[in-house]
Amino acid sequence: MGKKESKKYECIECGYTGTTWSGRCPKCGAWGTIEEVLALPSEDSQMKSFILPLPLHEIKSPARLSSQDEELDRVLGGGWVPGSSVLLAGEPGIGKSTILLQTCLRMAQKGKNVVYLSGEESPSQVALRAKRLGIASQNLKIGSGYNIDDLLAGSSGSDLVVVDSVQSFTSGDSPGLPGTPSQVRAVAQKAISSAKQNGCPVVMIGHINKEGLIAGPKLLEHMVDTVLLFSGDRLSPYRVLRAVKNRFGATDEMGVYEMLDKGLFAVNDPTRLYWRNKDEKVPGVTVTPVVEGSRAFLVEIQALVATSPFPYPKRTAIGVDPSRLQLLLAVLERRFGVSTISQDVYVNVVGGVAVRGPQADLALCAALASAHHSRPVDPSYCLIGEVGLAGEVRPLPRITSRIKEAKRLGYKRFIISKGQELEKIEGISLYKVENIKEALEEVGL
Ligand code: TYD
Ligand code: MG
Image 1 (cartoon, helix red, strand yellow):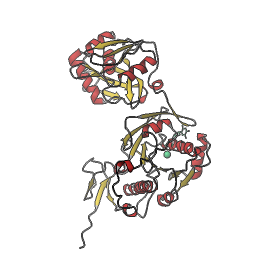
Image 2 (cartoon, helix red, strand yellow):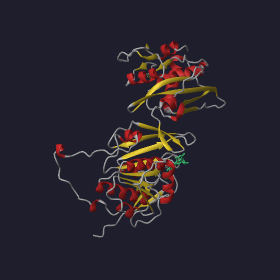
Image 3 (cartoon, helix red, strand yellow):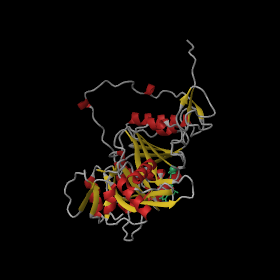
Image 4 (cartoon, helix red, strand yellow):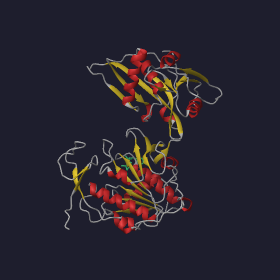
């Protein structure tokens, strides 16, 4: 009897939990980020505690609901899943409210019951924004306030509920201002259980801080079914939407948008963004097709090598993994005599896209070697391959889509791995190479 209630503390930056308070988080080292976790009333107690197991064939899988946005649908894995919870994270000002409001308007236009709850703007401000987007719709309901509980209760029977943002609402009697870890968690929990109970998908907007962590308890990521990340350079109009977690779909799809005067518009042909056709020959520039989810598009890779004024030369990689760059620089030096030991190296993938995995290795090596020699790569070539530690060029998956995309934009000469198997594609020439040395010779380096 009288079991001592032990307190729990959590770091709002990294999600570390412990039983003692401390001024500094023992895990991430941040100061003043440890807060007490307040016990929440169990939501499960309101729900049926169990469902009898059923044979698989008797369980109906719910139909997905289109967001009326082709890019968003693809990233979600085919649309909203009824009863699911989605977190849309991104830096302030990136366009989170815009993308969801325009989706809501389009869904409402199609006769869906959509509710947009804003804790950041008044209904008239949201209406003003909606007007700017120019999507006529009578049916969208807009709610605003500080406490999410009544707003959610009043939203039952909807097809979609948007919570803008999870950091601007409070829930229940838990103390604390909006945005504190316990409040963020309480609001999210409320929204998630309301989604489950009503079978209606709920999307929560979550602001992230500069370091890219989702502000508030990191725990939020584990609570929801899907986490979408909306990112981009605020100075450029382009935005990329990706799923970083998805219980109901793949995480390799990406949606590309352009922010214009009247909202966000899908960029259906990402190649247009990351590649530009030009005739002038510049050292350090190569082109390669990359595959993201179901799409292939061309990216331009740029490298610059300059004598370093520092004892420790800089390596700057934008759009490619820095450790990948280090590895390829080492391979180039040891296997091909391209030494950048006392030089600063800069690599940039044009258009702000991040190339994942080793798919741009060969093009990156050629760009680096070209920059090092100050000799351009013959621009009629497209280089496609992974590079291994021995300097060998390895095959890549989805080679046909890659080549077809480059062919669509006029490339006819492809440097690929000797080990690459592929179906016949008319109107192109293939140059099969074993290692980067052969590849670099072929492109004139
Ligand atoms: P917003 O959706 O409010 O960002 P978030 O919710 O992520 O904080 O969008 C912010 C920026 O987008 C703002 O600086 C204005 C710009 N914007 C446009 O350029 N065109 C538009 O049609 C809209 C609605 C916003
Ligand atoms: Mg907003």
